[in-house]
Image 1 (tube, rainbow, N blue to C red):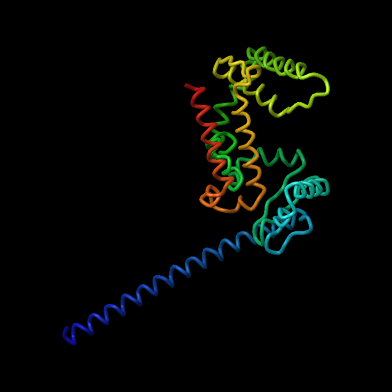
Image 2: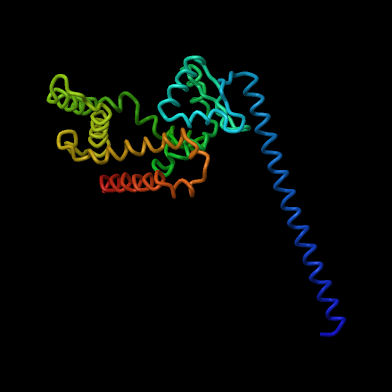
Length: 273
C-alpha cells in the first residue's frame, strides 16, 4: 500500500470514528433531555397532588409506600385499610421518589373519577387486557364512549324485563343448592354466585340452559377465573406491576397467568361455537 493510500485510509477511519462519537453523544444528550423532561413533568404532577391531597406516613425515600409489601400481603392490606379509614376521601401513595398514585375512597370522589373520559392507567388496566381484551373496562376516550353508546340501550329496563324470570330461576337454583348444603355448613359464596351469574349469562345471551349450577360442569372454569383475578390483583399490588411483561411472563406467576388466559379463551370459544 502506498503512503498516499495509507494516509487516506487513516483519515477516513478517523472521520468515521469522529462521526460515530458525535452520533453517540447526540443520542446520549437526547436521552438525557428526555429523562429530564419526564422527571420535570412527574415533579410538577407530584407537587400539584401534594398541594391538595394528604400523603400517609411511612414512605421510603426510594420505594415509597411499596416498602409495605415487604411486610406480607395480610399486613399490607391491614395498613392500607387503616390509611383508608384515616383518609376517608382520598390520599396519595408513593410508588417511588417520583411516581405516585391517587387512592380514592369516598363514593362521591369515585363517581367523579369514573365519569371522566380520561385515559385509564395502563399500569393497572393494561394487566387485564390479555384476559379481557379491549372491552368497556379496559378502554378509554373515544373508543370507550363509542362502546358505551352501543351497549347502553341493551341494558334499558324494558329490554331486560323479559329476562327477569331467567334471573329469578338461576337465583332459585343457587338458593336450592344452599338449602341442600344443610344448616351450619360453610359455603363458598364466590363459587356459587359466580356459577349463578354464568348460568344467567348463558341463558340470556346465548339461549343455553347448561344446568351448570347443578351439574357443576363449569367449576373448573370458575376456578380459573378466580385464579386470574387473584394473579391480577397480586401483580397490581406488588412490584411486578412496575416490570415489563417479558419479565413477568417468564416468572412463575406470569406463566400461570398465560396458561389461565388460554384456558378461559378456549372455554369462551367453545361456548360461542
